[in-house]
Amino acid sequence: MVALSRLTPDPAQASPRLAGYPFTLGVASGDPWPDGVVLWTRLATAPLADDGLGGMPGKDVPVRWVVAEDDSMRRVVRRGSVLATPELAHSVHVEVKGLRPGREYWYRFSAGGEQSPIGRTRTAPDPSAAVPFTLAFASCQQWVDGFYTAYRHMASQDLDVIFHLGDYIYEGAYGPTGGARNTPLSAAHNARLFTLAQYRLRYSLTKSDPDLQAAHRSAPWIVTPDDHEIINDWADESVPGISPENVLRMRAAGFRAYYENLPLRPSSMPQGPDMQIFRRLRYGRLASFFVLDGRQYRSAQNFARRFDADRSMLGTGQERWLLDGLGRSRTTWNMLANQVEMYQQNRFTADGGIEQFHPDIWDGYEAARRRLFGGIRQRRVANPVVITGDAHWSAAADLKADFNDQGSPTIGVEFMGTSISSGGNGVDMTEGGRLQLRANPHLKFVNNLRGYVACRVAANTWETDYNVISKVTDQSGVMSVRRRFVVEAGRPGLQDTEA
Image 1 (cartoon, rainbow, N blue to C red):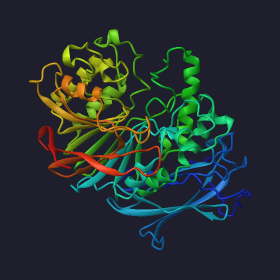
Image 2 (cartoon, rainbow, N blue to C red):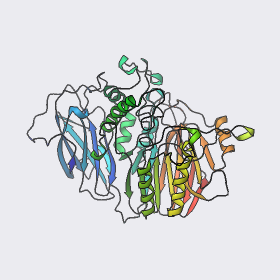
Image 3 (cartoon, rainbow, N blue to C red):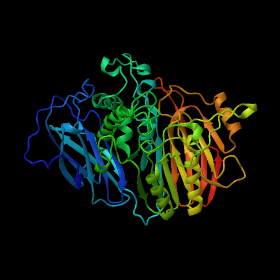
Image 4 (cartoon, rainbow, N blue to C red):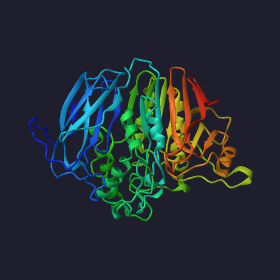
């Protein structure tokens, strides 16, 4: 076991007196390996304290943890202790090793004489095991736009692993009425995020939601940020109207708070404005997960230069890492956890309109997309599947070797999920969605409701459900499966089925 802490706690060390229950932000697990997972919690007796410190004293607090084979916590298989330090906002990230592959486990923390809720996690299968599994993915959860009812539904689904693809928080000012939530907020929330204290407070507000906490307790999460964890549409050191020095300051604060509040391994702890985000996780013989970082190394937006070979979405090092890993992979499915739309999204060419593309997505980095797709074809990568966040609508698309030639080979598929709440209540279809479908033959499905995506992965098939919710501005929203797609191993392309 390796745990991130400033020092190893003395078993006899007394906890400083805490002002209340410390596990108000819940518990979580993440990044499952065959022999273990990372466990997370962050102590906060007053999670919405304006200074972002959660009401905690400026002292180290000993935290004990246990892992058991049963949800009553009787068959304990691992235990230990770690210090929650003020430097990391009293968060802890415990790497538990020595567990068995492909097994359910339950875990719990204790501190200050209190016990946390019990969380459920699951280790990855043995690399030689072709065990079917389930996953879900979500993104874009603007707290003021609506409730997280979709997470309540997700938590009930007995999933093996959950992906979050970015926009866990939003950096804009939140007014005194809490938007659709109609919850009073102090003036500290009513400013765009810039300091570490502000980012910490925004995470505390977001993570105080009981449905989000339930989803974190239900399964291990694999996470990657997009732009709003820092500021909208940032790229490397570039944000229009903000100096590079201030962008780096925001990156340092935003990455630090992101790490403190999510179940990431200590190897991802940021160093100033830099953070190791991209990584590969093997999930048995069936799948390899390539978790991408589409912000930290990308070229600044310049749509006029989208065909220039020196421009990149992932950066030279990450691009090489991805293609080398895909080329070496021998799993049945190779999944890219990706932040922004990879399929070509020509929005308005139908009915004689003018071509319009979004410069912040892969359309703005055409040369980089062609290198990636060319590398996938050259290496004959088996069954590429891209899962994507960012947009506040659902989409499913075939990925074409050349999107402007629909007769070119289909090299893989992309499933893009809608938002959990961002954008407020959606509708089933908009006129813009209809235009997109007509303008992009590779695009097979568009929907503008909120929700999340669930997948069932087996040796021969990848089955995807688009789960949508009727409304998010109150908690009466009803979940349903709006569309289901199947991909057959060895046969690139989407097959539509009845939900």
